[in-house]
Length: 381
Image 1 (cartoon, rainbow, N blue to C red):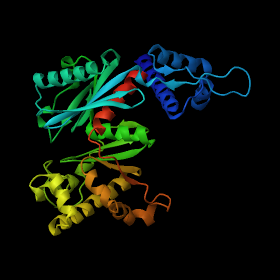
Image 2: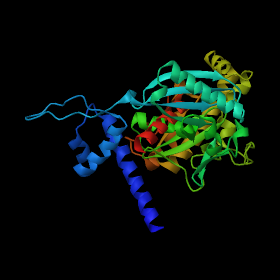
Image 3: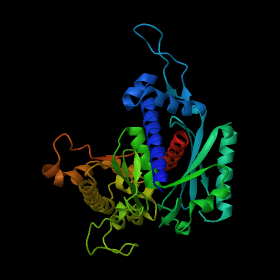
Image 4: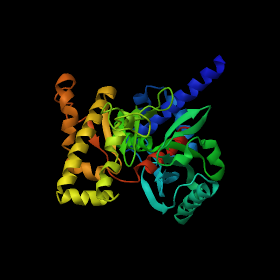
């Protein structure tokens, strides 16, 4: 047993060093082997071993040379972006999204497929067929290494398997395990909640190691990213910010509690005023419809309470994403409302205005994040 624990720790340490190495290579415009070894504080022989694994997978571009003060110019190491690809899939109730992402986290192709979700063999086979089609049409099938799936769902790891623990939007998936889905796909799968996938993407692409991600759609999902890794807590439910209580004895939530953030700040709250259409609601707001303005002011106050609570609990940047972004990025002053009550007590002037931010409103963000996670798994395996 002791040997197994030591072996597992060794594997984790190696994967951690390779992950750090890849991050350094991506951040630079060419870096040398010596610079990598120095930055990671590991010996040259160890570094050579790690690089060998990446070379065997054709993940490195070493065709360039860097300037030198004398002697032979050292080779520059870069990531060979188009050596391999992963496909990210974002599952929604009425459609799914595909995003093909290379090893440099560049999005090469995207596609939306309209199809109601059903947790059935036929549905998953259709998704797999769409993956194969987009890869084959673009000549990438031979270089695809995996599929990352993001779902509007809490996921947890049990007995080396991933369990879809809870979803309000696609309830049919509750209780499904990743091992049950894998047989329907031709490539290795990994699965993550939509907020975790989008948060991972934001963390890596923006160089923010620690963040709380708040995904606001017709439901509210959340995730906590620490050092570019998804933190799950003891039971896999860390980051369920939608169920923070903002109004004790308030309206009842589907979870059984009262006054949850999701009750007051899901986008359904706004749709109800515009015949079920969020786009129509934004039009009403643009026209300064009195009732729409009143509802949105109340909405922003509630959102500010939730964001302030997350800031106090997590002490990290709070990133807001999802379909709400199209509206709130025009009214970003609500961030002041979220931060100001705690500002004088905890943060200095330099911190103010940097703790709550808005992600882009790109609907493909969770799919891209899921593909990026699969890419990293391939590179560190």
